[in-house]
Image 1: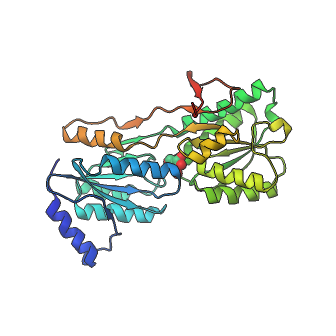
Image 2: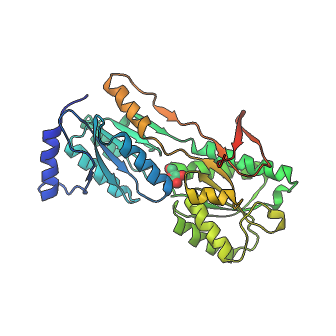
Image 3: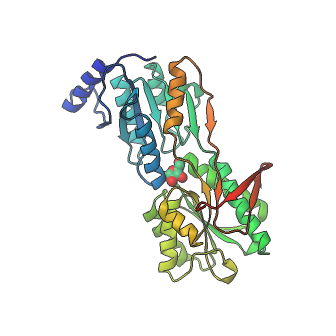
Length: 346
Ligand code: AHR
């Protein structure tokens, strides 16, 4: 598999730059020189919407950066699937050795992944999944169990209400969803939906906040104007949570866990963002479901295995924790597994 495609790559890059290719590939950022002997990896990152995403990009650039056996061709899809599809087609034209894809949403990948398969380029999925009829279109996947993350945070909320003797019907929750149709959104929204059905919680509204701080602020501002009973906001990532807290405070409310006394409890996911961690320290974010972005070395290990003729497991879930600086709930049990609630500042 470790073929030397430098010449082909350079030729095609020249065609791309001079606009002489048969189609119009997107510009890709060449991270490494394509020195002979290096394994060429085309990475289609979905965007730069969050601090989690930046950490993920950094991890990939480090694992495939200078002084490694790899030459990385990086493309930022700017949250648009069409850009990612064009990037993959460019990688196919460049005849890279591997394609790594962090897909923005799950559907719509069948055709382009068939093209990659026809070109005999293995595709590795990272972070989110794709929903394709034929699973042989990708080699393997590494990422988080997003539904489990959601279930853990909801179980924390449930345990909190038990400790504080808060009746289930007193919870009025809004869900600031992540990019609709992404694995992270689907899993975390499902986690909340299931818990709400089980405990009889009131889901006041679900709104798309696209995993960004600005959308989180905007959407929460609107929700606070529309509803006067919101006491829990389930933010599907930390950037949305930061935006939501800004909206809560601008509207004259207090972000905090004391919902019996008018505070609005903020729940979140990721645990990588410094500002979010400082809000957790202040009790403004009550609980964070960890989502680990450091997939670079994991993807590298998969490519190494393939180079050595070993077949990695198809689905690879990373282990994750649950964070809170509050001491009310020490452990949560989901699907018979007990997770210790960790103080992220210790
Ligand atoms: O797919 C992972 C999610 O995407 C992270 O929770 C979020 O911050 C990012 O934008």
